[in-house]
Every structure is written in C-alpha cells, then in structure tokens.
Image (tube, rainbow, N blue to C red):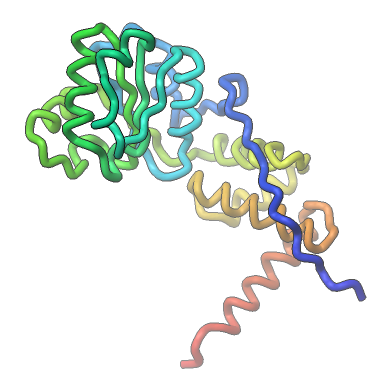
Length: 232
C-alpha cells in the first residue's frame, strides 16, 4: 500500500478579471454601482459584506477599470491626497473597518470631493457599525452610499464552487458540485476553504475529485470528529 504523500503547497492564482466575476442576486447591486462610476452620487462608495464574499475581487475590477490607486488603510497619513488625485481619478481602501488611519482617511475623503475624484471603501460591516472615533469622518462615512453584498444564494454557491475548482485547474462534474453544495456551510469563505481542502486531499491520495472520493473523505473526517468527542 502506498502511503498518501503530503502535497507541496505551490499556491494558485484565482482569476480576478471582470469577465469571470460571478454575478447573482447577492452581489448584483454592488457590481451595478461600480459599473456606474464615475456617476456616483457622492465622492465615496462603501461595499460591505462577510469575509470571502467578493469585495476584493470587485475592488480589483474597479481599480483596473478606473486606474484607481490601492491604499493601505493603516498608512493613509503618509499619502498626499491632492498629489494622488492629480494622477488618479479614484482610490481604493480595503478593510477600512478593521483599523484605519482616521485622520488620513478624513483628508483623503475631503480631497476626493474637492478634486472631483472618488473613493471606494470596503469592510465587513456597514459604515454605521465601524468603530470610528473622529466625528467628522464618521459623519462623512454615514453620508456615503453603501451597498451590502449578501451571503450566496443557491445559484451563486454552485457557480462559485465551479470557479474555485477552475482556479486550481480542476474540472469537476455537476454531480460533484451538487454533492458539496448540500453538505457545506453556505458562505464564500467556507466554499474557498472546502475547495482548498478537497484539492489538497485529492493530491495527497492521487485521486480525482469525484463523488465517491468526496463521500469517503467526508465520511472519514466525520468519523474522526466523532471519535474526538468526549464520552458522556
């Protein structure tokens, strides 16, 4: 019997182009607002939703289309916003709810408004729930238009699984997608973690990703989980 080999983590590069972004009811509004740029009602737009819901993908598409500068939320104080907007029509600040240079973001917002430029912000939570201490910045964020990316629906969940496997150069059948979609947590983050786990396990076992392989893998892992539970 050949023992499973530990696969080397060579990484993979998910496709981030606009053509392969999956659109469904959960993210259609967000995609439509980015398509409306530069005709936004104000200088800033906020996209918010759970981890892995596609905020980074949308921000990347927006940056490619608009020429926006991607900025580190913790280093905004080092940015000269007026000089930035001399050469860029927009800027992107991701994960702005996880710790941001508030004074830097305040000046960036004001400069975008004065220069007729735009600012795309992303976060897990709606702006009203961000821990912002600077009152003037908080008022500006609350006034900005915000769009929520919702958890995936059935159509999105299955399409996402297909795309995640394709990003890893794996073609799987519809039976595999349907089998996984009914046995997993319904979130973008869970889909990414599951596909990565299945890919690694298949490489280690030198097996194709099929329903029989998945059934063996998930049943074995469930048995192992049950065995670890304390006896009552």
